Amino acid sequence: MEPTDLGICEDQDPNYKATLRIALSGLSGKIAKGSGWHPFKMTVTNPSKNAIKDVTLAAGVGPLDSDDPFTLKQAVLQAYDPDGKRWFNVTDDGTYSLGSLGPGDLPGHTTVDLSFRLNVTAQAPVGKALTIGLGVYPDTKNNCEATSFAAYQISIVKPGTPTTGSNPVPQTGGEAPLPSEAPAKGGSSHVVPASDTTAVSEGSLAHTGASSALPLIAGIAGAAVVVGAGTVFAVRRRKSGGAAV
Image (cartoon, rainbow, N blue to C red; front, side, top):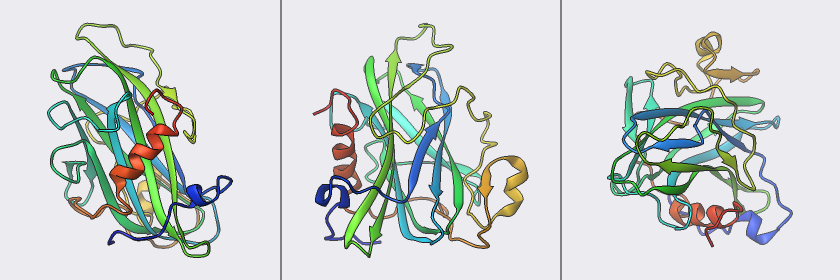
């Protein structure tokens, strides 16, 4: 999808609430530098009866006190492609850990789980960080770009620092608290199209009646950013209740 001139619905109407729901789950509240991959999940839900068209997702991680995401040398964010059976970097420019996925359509009364993992390298700065999941789609009725997001504060700590039992801090706008259970390691939680009903028994897709949908992630990512995902990411950071302003 090409960038659009539509304004952001929430900016035009402070009381606007997007239909799409985004939630993140599975990350520890503390991640030690150089400790390897940490899996988590983005859950995308359409609670309405009508399909949401042209949904583009974005995910990113960065310092709490900056609008810029981490570079790939500091933290690598990856999503799982079940068709290719491999992980790929979530990045739109090959430099920063912020990228867009999609677009795709999400049928009514449908929930899709997308698998991600995060590797914080030895080059990452110690301190507070923010993870964000974002969904963007055109609201044709209101002639604006609808956004839904979840944001959680985590701490990047020195190697050897105890991290067991730590919980991330949901920021204002986070759709749901993070459960303590993390997805199974090794990529067993898959990114799936909503039409893949065989995944229901594996717990990787909650499917409630829709017969088909385009995959929200298809093959290796590299889609154009919609309304500038980086700009929206920065706006969501400032509205997340964290220190970033």
